[in-house]
Length: 389
Image 1 (cartoon, helix red, strand yellow):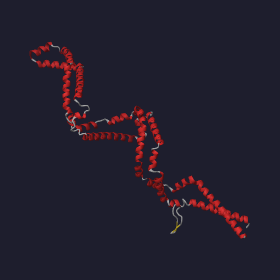
Image 2 (cartoon, rainbow, N blue to C red):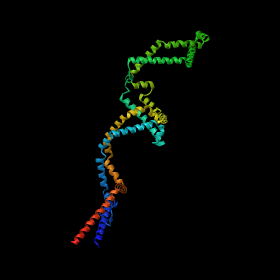
Image 3 (cartoon, rainbow, N blue to C red):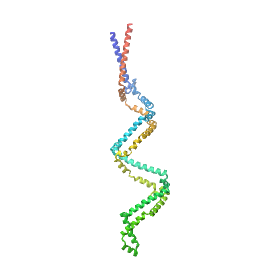
């Protein structure tokens, strides 16, 4: 065989062997997927490296991610960066702007998140929860403030003799004004006519008979009305009414809240208050609210909400940063990563690695061809020169 042909064949064979070796070495990272047995004999290097060591890789990757890549300190630093805070503020401002300009009603907006049945159930739960919360809050307040024995005067702000006099005068003036309006009304005039007729009937005897004959009830009422109105507007009526109200206020101020409510309602105080809470038409209020546009709920407070966003963002991010270590401990990031890697299909992992590093793997294959060719060339030249020598 000519020397040049011998060298060419040696280079080609060595290059082929180098390329094939590297190619199969890469393939053996992922193949075979499962161990191969011939009878009881286990074929070496099966399964491939990654399928065989997947559990170890998953555990190591979980530790690396938790200890070096996604750490509590790194996440805390991220959420506290000014750039991150600015992005959060801009996101909140954008949300407020979208809501304030939305034409959707509250119901329409809710139905984008929940189904009709879920929304109705949510409303029922919301009403029941609000009512139960109010009743629990009332019970705690009643017990904590000891309202069963607390005097009314200690519960009412500004309770003093001077204020009682002012309140009594105001109540007396309002009360006498209401009485005057009632007397001047058609119902009031009819009432006075009945009173006049009753007085003449009760007079009896000769005087009663003469009054019934000669006295006109309507004229009597017309003369009585100005006199009664003048009396109601007089200082004496106002003073005596205010004094009576002040006396009652002083008396009621010494009574415990529970006793006063029981006196006024005829029921046990806490039970009466709970009954009133149960009667609150929360369901009707929710139905009225759900038909209002979302923007009508935001627009009156828009300026205040936008002004509060920086403070809200800072406080929220501070709370998030404070809770990150506990959250990561609860999540168990190493275990989570390990579990996800173990569940990740080897086929899909091979596709991902080859899509990212396919060029490098092909370069390694051709590098084997090149190195094999160089080795074949050197080997053939050494053999030729050694034979000549």
